[in-house]
Length: 122
Ligand code: FES
Image (cartoon, rainbow, N blue to C red; front, side, top):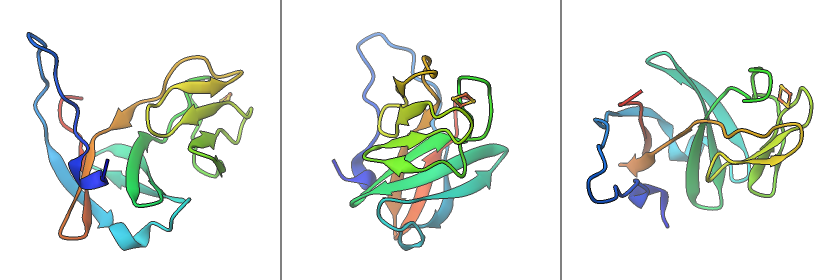
């Protein structure tokens, strides 16, 4: 799925929080296989690119609430620089001990070459 198309689809009867997409950085500013830290409207984000897809997670490890920035991307996951817990960038799920709880992910899209991130409903 292209980054421009990625939005969650609610289940019937599900209450959907209000979306608020805000512009962040240029798609081309994110090298493939890397991430860029960006703070927007109080949200500390890691905007990553896996091939041509953008994934956005909160810059906060769920293990001991330390920043994930400076962690390496391995495959499709980011490794926490503090204890080495890992999280799938696509889902936010913890995939390696000692992390066991997910991290927050954000919906994103690319509009006219700019990565927009949904910070609504927080
Ligand atoms: S603070 Fe991230 S794994 Fe411990």
